[in-house]
Image (cartoon, rainbow, N blue to C red; front, side):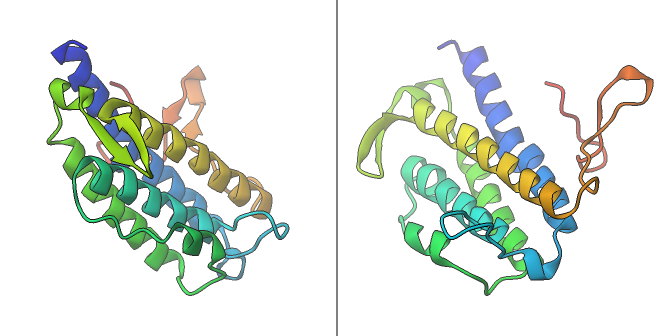
Length: 180
């Protein structure tokens, strides 16, 4: 992997985990009524609250601990067993802290580190593969959170302004861009 390609991969990983996906989750959660935050459509499904806990746990385990070397204190089953206890602000603060810690770890990586191996969840994997997994995993659950928000609050979630035929991101903090 060339240094330039590695740098671009790391920059985009930081962007997705530190900016785009958390912003979309924040926007989606803002539309979900407090009494529906822990709602499950059936016993085998996860609530929005469960998914946020799960994302924070996954990012901490794979990036902060697995790649960065911090102690792994994850209780994965508790992420799915929870039926309440945190409100919107608490969940988002928990997720934001995990993402900030992950972005800080990613900022220390380089092309050589991406080729190194780590053992995460009992599996040997490259740092590149672990990071790629986390970004893709985060994307999938972000989509689930958006879908839950759209089920519960139709037409309340919109991420792009299509005026003039161009999709302009409306979910990003002021001054942020989704273009690399």
